[in-house]
Image 1: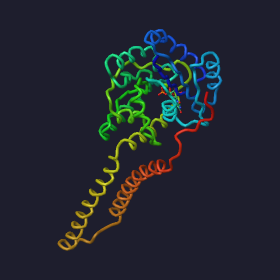
Image 2: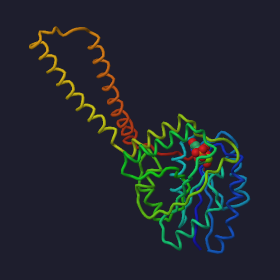
Image 3: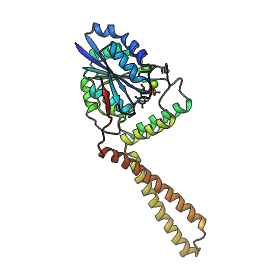
Image 4: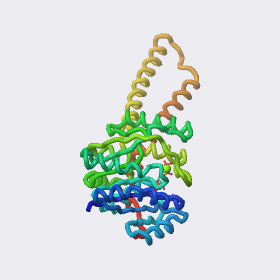
Length: 310
Ligand code: UDP
Ligand code: MG
């Protein structure tokens, strides 16, 4: 018998816990025929609703259902990490419990790993239907930007829905960084990944936990975690402005010596000072971002804290 661990991060998903479970069990017959057993790990990320209650109810009925209950909301990345750490399966899959990641794809994904020798099967949505246009616009910009800036490939529209072999999971777990950006980490570890594409599926119940602002911050975190190009930009800006300053000094001196032109007026001065101080603060900000991430890393705080485990 092989074991398939199913990891489901949940934050305020009481309405979806059981629907997800029912949907997942539709693939049970297929996996039974392949001698594969389930282990279902719900990671409760500090929900304020009845998520824990719902999972406990399921556990009463089916002992393959497990619960990792965080002491507070640590974010989805922490949930994924905890799930991966606790999983025992020969294969591990993680997916959202709002049914935006259809469990019905699992048999096909499993086939790619067992028959075609892939190390992981990942999914991406090729459309963004049902999403506010402004969000899609910024998402596209983000992916094109980060892929120019980072050597790790970050796939546009990639979801966190992914089936992996144990070896792949162990590689992910060996990356113990505090600032976790999964979309980058999965690309960074390498291995052979098969991409499955599907149309965006809208959330069945409840609402998305990602506000525009949260996504924006997440995008910045991703860039900082997987690229040091902004630091290089800061240095280049510095060099450019030094060169400009030298030219300006020469022009001013020549103007005074040759044309006897009195260096006139404070407007130009004010413009120069505000421009340069703006650029300086901008560059300092970039350095500050990296410093703050480094600060969080060196503190070695745990990525999550478990209150209860069933
Ligand atoms: N999630 C989580 N912690 C959070 C936010 C979200 O565990 O802080 C879970 C959530 O319960 C869901 C998955 O992550 O199962 C994806 O969240 P959501 O559906 O809100 O994101 P979207 O699909 O809109 O990108
Ligand atoms: Mg969702």
